[in-house]
Image 1 (spheres, rainbow, N blue to C red):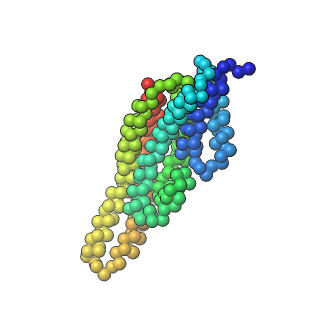
Image 2: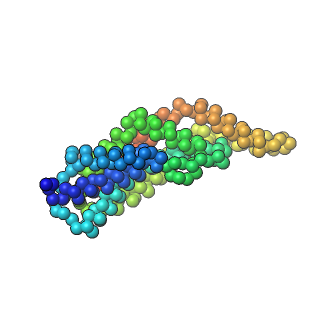
Image 3: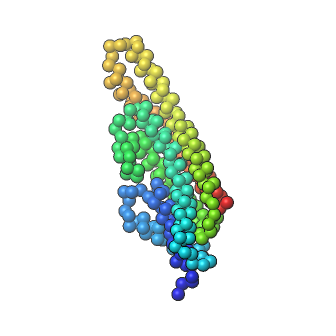
Length: 255
């Protein structure tokens, strides 16, 4: 027989883990096989509980367990939100570059969010996620989940109000990081816009719409290729921001 409180504690472990896996853009893409996500949740739950878990002090009532489950869901989503916030910087960069190049008119449906996503945005997001796998960023997420059970043990009803302020700060920081991420290409595209305006003023007979659209795409692609070496240090800063954000979430969850 299992000790009293084991099933309830294991359920709370499963709640936090499942919310993290489903909300994280690295693990919870809606186009992935659902069975793989269920298996990942089950494996992580059992491994983490066997390593650092313990039965609850006493079997809680259904209402008490529901309140504790809500807290676990908030902590799991907060960890996943850090990943979403860092990915926001890449999305902001892709949106701004795609808008200046005119690619936003050919937006595709993002399989993760179900909304329209420009081609340049999807390219930057895919590059970021592949790079994250290359530097073992998925290990960082799993390690943060394991540390969260140490910093904020299950079965303890504590305030999570500090997580809201942390989320607001993270979004502002990542929005600024996205602008810096796309700044070299945006500066060049601004110069192109000025040149197009001068050409339209000097030679009114030219169909500036056709010339401008083609010129923007050509210069944008050349700029993305020319400034590609700058993506590596920018990606490294984003990965560092991810690690720092996860650390701040763990501190806020455990306070």
